[in-house]
Image 1 (cartoon, rainbow, N blue to C red):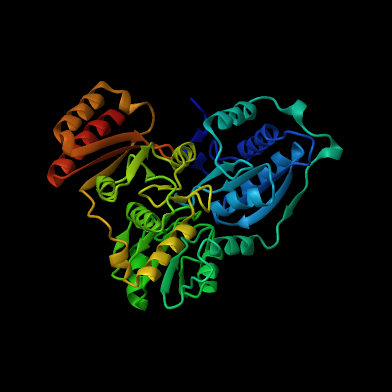
Image 2: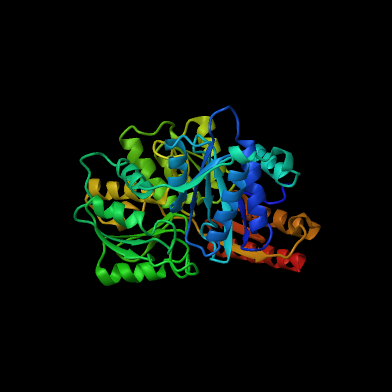
Amino acid sequence: MRKFFGTDGIRGQANTFPMTAEMALKVGMAAGLAFKTGGHKHRVVIGKDTRLSGYMIENALVAGFTSVGMDVFLLGPMPTPSVAMLTRSLRADLGVMISASHNPFQDNGIKFFGPDGFKLSDAIESEIERLAVSDMTASLSGPRDLGRAKRIDGAQQRYIEFAKRTLPREMSLEGLRVVIDCANGAAYKVAPEALWELGADVIPHGVTPDGYNINKDCGSTSTDALARRVHEVRADIGIALDGDADRVIIVDENGETIDGDQLMAVVAQSWQAHDRLSQPGIVATVMSNLGLERYLGGLGLSLARTKVGDRYVVEHMRANGYNVGGEQSGHIVLSDFATTGDGLIAALQVMACVKDQGRPVSEVCRRFDPVPQVLKNVRYAGGAPLEQKTVQEAIRDGENRLGNSGRLVIRASGTEPLIRVMAEGDDAALVNQVVNDIVDVVAKSAA
């Protein structure tokens, strides 16, 4: 069992293990040592979101990396996918994003990207852990070999140009009124600017970060305010990013939410029509709705499922040659352009479809009727509730009741102390009852 790496890097409450300055220092040292190969001067790119604790974690990481002889390029607040892109562009050995994604400001996290811009494998993360808890004194650089740190000018514009180039050269967003909700997070500068430069009429929302308000009543996990704003200004589309802008949720002109499953369906159908799919299908997780799978089947496309986490989606895409994948939560991975989920790029592809078809977002982005799906979370303080006999019996009973007309997915969250219970099927009442019964048993076990 790994001590502090989860499904998406390291994450936890700021100033509490493992998200302490001391741990960040050691992780920086360990990651630097793990990626120092060859005789060239080594460099690492570091970006962050807008959390107050980002200052603490950033400085600790800088101390760790420079102490083992790595030069550090600081980007400041920038989206996670921009860190992946700039790691490759700047020929860095390693990229780091300081963010807890959609979590509240109290939490923070550290995500790593290799020199190819892809997230690290479990094996490499385990090696970083091993080094971080060992005595690294003998591996520290001498006084002449310490690394330097500097801020990179123009990083925001480089990413904006990169995002704009994912659309055809002749494509313009002129005529589209767009409300963009940046969750008071990492994309609060670059996303509105990119949309404006592409010709859209842009109404920014969630672009006044103060260190505490990231994801608070805004962003992809809280779209009510965005829906109201879309109504108020009579916008054609609302775009909700999360705190680090690697996921996106769309709000149509009626204020209705469109999730990642629908967005993947939009892109899959469009790319199939334009002969852009590298494989006859897409990749999603076990949480994606059965309705998506049925819709794709009607197009002659497959849906390959992975465990939850965009890194596992990307791993399957790379291993099997897919170029479209993602998660219901809004991580959309388009590997023709990016190595990880990119909320802005996904939104641009959807808007390109809207422009091409000349129809409202509510029509373009409603590709299938989702089957009834219920997801509930049970918080636990410790232990392993899913290993309890009573819980396992309740799960088997739920699977038997759903039969072939539905699916049941129960898993422990990789980023929070939660047990997630999800069921879906054609019978809404049965799905709801199955979830409630299992939640009751898990809650008793967790208590």
